[in-house]
Length: 322
Image (cartoon, rainbow, N blue to C red):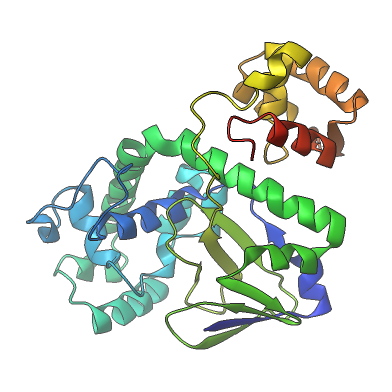
């Protein structure tokens, strides 16, 4: 079991990430790829002969065993801003950290000889690793990314709804059964017994489409992060959830309402709904007047979130009725 110890300050600083983290999803999908029954959404399969370092999987699979430890440097916090910022951070990993984390990995899983240059921090080896991650992410996860982000945004909206209406402790109670809140400790089902003391740093919770179970960074000195399986939809919709609302709101406005999962900015809302920025702003204003949407300014952007009434309206008019 993993026990995450909170203080009052930690509760204030605990937050849910803005969406799926591309490098966490990349690494965790590699776990799933090696399952006896891999996720059918993943179009590639492990083949013999990849351990020699040829091709993206040849570099990545030795660093990400089917189960257990993998190096923390593969999932830098900078990846929350996108694949490229994450890879830039990875290529800047100090040599001492590369060597230490690869030594831990080698103690548990034999590593191919080429990883020595990676442990030495050779720039060419780091570039090859970054290229392998980039290629695998774009070729394998790229086609799946809209599905991944939708699931993460839907899960995030659920957590934020609990946070805004009941505070951080109420939000932490939504993560059962694998994560149970017993104040002031979050008990997490985990393959090893360990304690994580936040010591005022707060906790970043990251929803994941490919996580089998909750996973944390191994190094407790790093920013506390807990990645967890995003809640799956109750049913696969065969038609847009907003279709039943179209006669009431109109197709475009109903689509805008459906696109509001995960408190998007007006720009993100326009992209998701496939409308212009001005149209998204106008539709959001009408929905706000109707009490279906709440909007708040954050820095230079305006974010929109479904109100309980808006969520209920979508839920009652979804194909599954969920």
